[in-house]
Image (cartoon, rainbow, N blue to C red; front, side, top):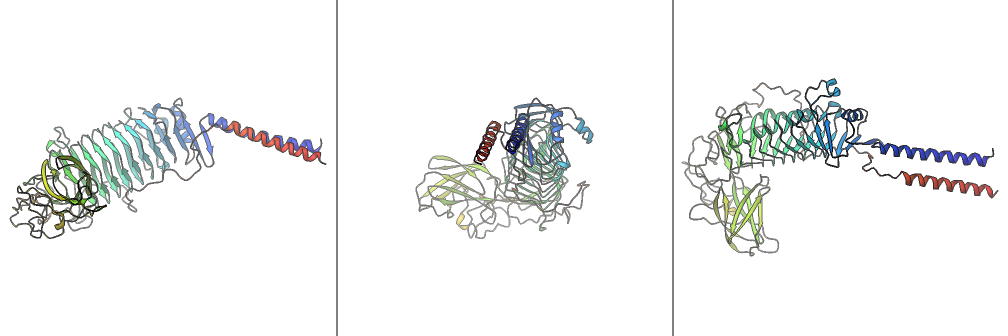
Amino acid sequence: MNKKIINILFICLISLFLVSAVSAADESQANGIVTSYDNTVYQITSDLTNENVQFMFDNAIDGDTFEFTDKKYDGVSLVVDKKLNIVSKQNSVVHTSNQLTDKARSLGITDTFGFYFTPNSGGSVLTGIKIIASNSDYGIIVDSSDNTTIKNNIIDGGDNSILVKNAGGIDISNNNISAANVNGIQLQNVKNSLISENEVFNTGRSGIETSDIYYCNITNNTVHHNKFNGISLFNISQGNIIKHNQAFENPNGIYINSISTDDVINANTFNYNRRYTDYELGAFESGNGLLFGEDFKTAKEGNPSRLEVKYNVLAHNEGYQAKNNPDLPVFKLGDNWFDSTDDENTFVCPMLIAGIMKMGTFSVKNGIGLQMYDTNGNPVNEFGTFDTTVNVDGNQYTARFVNGKATIDANLDDDKEYDIEVMVGGEPVKYTYKTASGEKGTNQDSQTSVIPDGKHGMDGSKANESANSNSNGTSKGSNISQNGTSTSAHFANSNSTKVYGRNASGELQDSSDNGESALTNGNINAGDSSVGEASQEGKAYEVVPPSKISKKINDTSGLVVLSIVVIMAMLIYGYWRKRDEY
């Protein structure tokens, strides 16, 4: 056989090999598997059994992706024992199983679940799935699986929707969680984690319940219509940031029954929480914006590790806006907004001292600007969110406070004074307001005038000047000025200097001595108490490692085969012509 024939046969063999490889890849696609470089994307269809999917999980490698592609799946109970990405782009609905699988039993798991993340699954992601957990104890369990992300899911039912225990670096964000028999999100011995942008409602106990948490951010969550509390803190709570949450229509907005060290509870909105006659702690312990439990402890006043509670909205709760346990020492809150004009100041319990924030105005072009101030007259830029009604020139507007400010585009004339009314505690508070002049406005504080009935706003231009409280505590609060009579909000709201916690003057010494150290009392089983470094608020944890994972499966095999055939034909033709020239 001459060399020409041998070379042509060799080229044909190479072509056949390439075509076979493409055909194998096409067959792999037909089976719902796409391999691309380091990782594989598996398509999970509803005709696969739970055992089939578990087998695929067990034989995957770290970084593989499992995509649920159908609308509905039944009897799901999957153990995630590797770093996997579990996703759905179809809003797949997964109904959990009420039975333990052989895999779960082999690991000593005793509770039923939809997804169980083991210590080997650190860095996994679960996103885009609706989990109906009414058949199981839990929707999701994260057990010692660090850096795991649970994001953009809907979880309905279960005794507990999400349980995280003995883990760190967890990201639970943008989930909709409802109808759990017990807790929506339950954290046990969790460190350096982010719980953010979740809506948790209609649970049998707390929306978010914690026990032994360290350096976690619980931020921007909405918790409502739960039967115990919106947020509950138990055992040890250290270095946590709880900010910008909204809790309403619960028995209590937040319940603090922990040994608290270096915790910050700022800029939240705890309002419209209701009394419950069958409340677990008794009806008289319900209906509060904030409630301290009998096991609450923190460092003494002046100690930097003492619990900080300030710039929150505590308003319109059926019980107290804030309530201490009668067996605990008097506790001094920071400055908060109570949305009240109650001269008797009965919105906090006798065992708390409350600093009452003030509302003032600032000038904006064509509109109205409202600003929150602390008791020293300093503008507050991190604050809870609430709405109030403003009346001007016979028109009514709704102003929403965000980060301490509210602005209304009221189409007012430039550089002109207006009498405006702002509703505070259901009563109108009058201001004389002057709009800004110029194209962009001056954003200057706008002075107010004293209204004869005494109900007036803060003179923002005088906000930083000293104000004194009468020694008998009977001032009703005139306009803040050099000769001002109170540093409290629209009113001194202070008819007594007794230790009732009802005055904003702050003259009473907090007698709390809840331990020189926040860890002096209590029988706490916190496990490993090392906390590492504090997490940053809003930290975005790694969702998927950098890899060349195919995002979409396209049937391009025919085009590839055709291209290979054309190229091989050109090579053979060129080779043949070259030989003919000799």
